[in-house]
Image 1 (cartoon, rainbow, N blue to C red):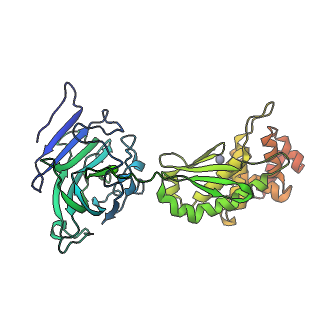
Image 2: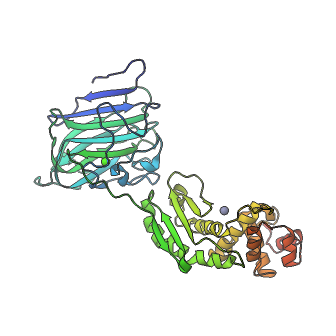
Image 3: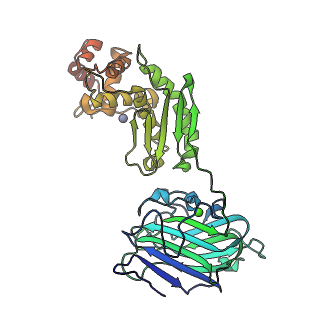
Length: 441
Ligand SMILES: [Ca+2]
Ligand SMILES: [Zn+2]
C-alpha cells in the first residue's frame, strides 16, 4: 500500500490496492477526510460522480437484504446527484439497520465494454468506508446464475471476481468521503460485462449502524449516455378549476401511497373545505402545492399556498395519521390569513383549532375524535382541544360558527366577544358548560 500526502495536512489519502483478484485490474481508493469533503466529490485520481455514464440507464436491484427505510432507494445510485453533506440519508442508499450488508445487482441491459467502475460513499462515521467484493458477468457464461442469492457463491455460479475492496482506515475515525475506482492497469477495458454484482459487507458490527452510505455507482464505458429524465411534479385537476401541484420527485417511493390514499382525499376534500369556509367576499386559493421533503423535520407546514410534508414522518405514518395531517394543512391553504391593515392578529390556537376541527370532526372517522381531559384542558390549548370545543358550539349553538370565525379571522376581526355574539354565552361560560359534558378521566 502506498500513501501520498500533501504539505502540512492530510487532505486526501490515495491507496493503490494490490489485493485484486483479477489480473490487470487495479483498485484505487481515495478518501476526503471530514472537513475537506464537499458535495462535489473531488478526488485526485478518481473522477467525480457522473450523470451520463453507462449506469445511468442500468437497472439496479437488491438481493438478499433490504434497503433502510430512512435512506433512498437504489435510484440514487445512478442519478448523478451527490449528497450535500456527510449525513444525508435521503441522498444515499444503504442496507437496513443491523443487516450484514447485502448484494447490489446492476444490469446494463447488454454486454458493455467496461473501462472503469467507480463507487462513492460519504458519512461522518463508520458508514463512510466501503467493503465489498465486485463480480462481473457477460451474461453468456455457461450455467450463469444471474441473480445469486445470499447462499450462492458468485464465482461458483458463472461470475468473475474483479476486485475486493476495503477502504477502512487501519486507525482513527473511519468517517469521510470515499471514492473507489476499479480499472485496467494499462488503461484498457476491464472486460465486456452485462451484469455487475456488488457483494457488500458491513463496515463494523459493534452497533446496527455498520452499513455504508453509498452515494453513487458509475460504470464508465468511454461513452456519454443520456442521463435519466429529471422527474417533474404532477398537476392534479380538481373541482371548480382548482389544481394541486403534487411534488414527490425527491421521494418517489411514496408514489403508490400518494396515488392510492392521498390523492383521492385531496381531490375530494379541498373543495369541501373551501365550501365549508366560503362566505361573502371570502374565497380560497385555486392552486396550491404539496411537496414532500426528505430532510424536513417535524410533520408538515404551510406557507401561503405551499404545503410541505416531512418525508421521514410521513413514511412512518402512512397507514396512520399521514392523510389527516394533509387535510389539516389544506385548511390552512383555504384560511389564507394575512395581516389586515387596522386588523387584529389571530390567536394561533383559533387558527390551529379550526384546522383541526375540520380534520377531526369532519374528515376523520368518529372513532378517532380526540378526547379532552376536563381536569386539565383549556380552550386555548389549540389543535384538538380547541377543535372539540368548536365542535360543541357547532352541535349545540350555531352550525355556521366555523364559517363565521373564518370570515372574521380573514378580515382581522376575531375577538373573544364573537363567541358571545354567535352563541349567547361568553367563551368562558361556554367552556365551563362544555367540560361538564365530558366524561371524567
Ligand atoms: Ca452515475
Ligand atoms: Zn396547523
